[in-house]
Image (cartoon, rainbow, N blue to C red; front, side):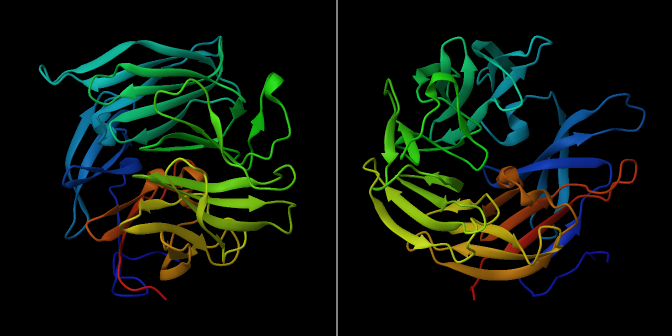
Length: 367
């Protein structure tokens, strides 16, 4: 069934089709603007261009389309970005790109870390106030975490991480970098171990990680479904196995003590979609398929940051193979100007992609 350019299900929900020649993959807040970024194949162009555009909030139309060099921070409404240089040897070099405040030109700095990219070892990135955190699981030193200045692109902190984890869930807030076991995480090399630690924290300026959330009892056999940081707080959905009887608790931590403010049973029972967006002031938001993961009907849910309760804001029809079903769905959602915006990437068979869509859900009452 086609999705029309109209209000859906409730007056608080609206969606529009995006231009068919643009393949937007992320949405972000840039000052007073909502920014889309992705790629486009222009008429007569033999390659793919990286593009960004603003969204006109009244009618959700795309404006101010701009083609930029791939790796330009403006594509992501960010002061700096990590640029990876791939090689046939699978040794990936990472540099920091920023806009020079004097010349206005793109400046790509020297290599800050080199890591081995394998199927289970990728560069992980987390944004925090004033800085960007990088986590590389396999380097010549072991696993490394780097803190990069937003203002200068300089390395402020370079710490070897032990135990080393592949594919961890990572976030950052004012208290440092947090790493946790995701559903497909593992410990690397000599770090392979059983541990009761759920979340590890690397403090600003610290020379090693420390256990953050260590529940009493036996070895932790679970995973973190999602984790998000804001200000002085951290929220995580902590799930215990075995599979088939997964029990998850939405948990909030304040400060650096690791003592839960609350641990509320996740009413969804399985950790939800694997991502959330928002903060302690606006609330935390995500989407949940109604029925199976192949469903096109989704509930937009709000998680109360003060007690962990989950409520439904609206039900929307989203495309088949909606990209928000995955852990990186957070790059396709943002809370801005009193609404939740969802970006659905183009979908469909090769050569016949359906255009992407942009959704706006007003943040009113929940049920």
